[in-house]
Amino acid sequence: MELNYILELSGVSKTFGQTRAVQRMDLNVEAGQTTVLIGPSGCGKSTLLRLMIGLIRPDTGTIRFEGTELTPDNVLALRQRMGYVIQEGGLFPHLTGYDNVSLMAQYLGWDDNRIKARLAELTDLTHFPTDGLDRYPAQLSGGQQQRVSLMRALMLDPDVLLMDEPLGALDAMIRAGLQTDLREIFQTLGKTVVMVTHDIGEAGFFGDEILLLRDGQVVQKDTLETLVSSPAEAFVSDFINAQRSPLETLGGGES
Image (spheres, rainbow, N blue to C red):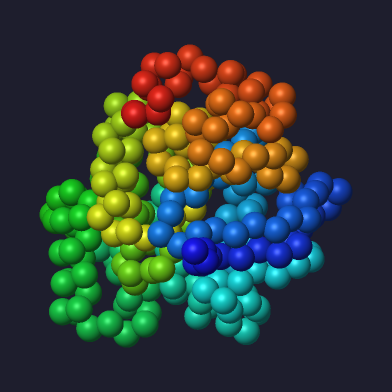
């Protein structure tokens, strides 16, 4: 059966000064799956995500989204079909939750009724209190801020959702509850998700497929079970064993 790829990277590399953030690589992201990028700090996972959404341009190679190559001429239009959740949410502090979520819809000229109808769908989906939309980010809890950030990313009903360590700044209890809600949301929507995390338990909890990176290269692309049972090289085992205690505590990543 032919696989349906929503993102296709061919010969892509990226360098910042003397640092090669992403080595020349080919990578395909299958539609309808959750793909998790994981690896040590500085391995290139966040850079790879920003390349996928067109926030930065590759030095070499091409990136295709649903068959169309990202170029300076079309990247803004294509980005409207991608939802992006940045580290720590990235909400605008001077805007209410309502205005943060609806910002792009307002920019695109949606009428008030359409915006309110979509917001009703999203607050129900994310279990966010409707009256919270009138508050500013500083008046929301960390978990509520992340739900607002998720609603903003989903507002235009994108084809793919890109998430850069969306839960990394939350404490353990809030993080556990939001992980469960997020996985239910992914299953409900059936969207393609690409998520960056540093936590192997979280990667196993969400990922249909996990890409373990090191020094801007993909070391192994597999399920968590295969990474554990059949590591491609010693680095894979070393990386997983370094987080063995969290894995055991999480029961294989269910937190």
